Amino acid sequence: MYFTDRGIEELDNRRGQEEVTFSWLAEELRHFVDLNPEFETPIERLATYLARLDDEDDD
Image (cartoon, rainbow, N blue to C red; front, side, top):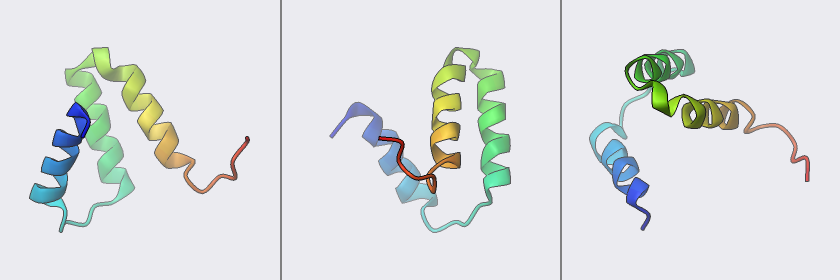
């Protein structure tokens, strides 16, 4: 298990039964980056990854 999996596991355990919209998620990510600007690049990469999940692979 990677160290980051702990946070993912906690998220799943604490909020896994909730339903959210991508608009809500986008707003929370913006808020997180406002509070933690050093994480702007990884959050941007995560958001782009999620936005493009249905795109065909470019490999």
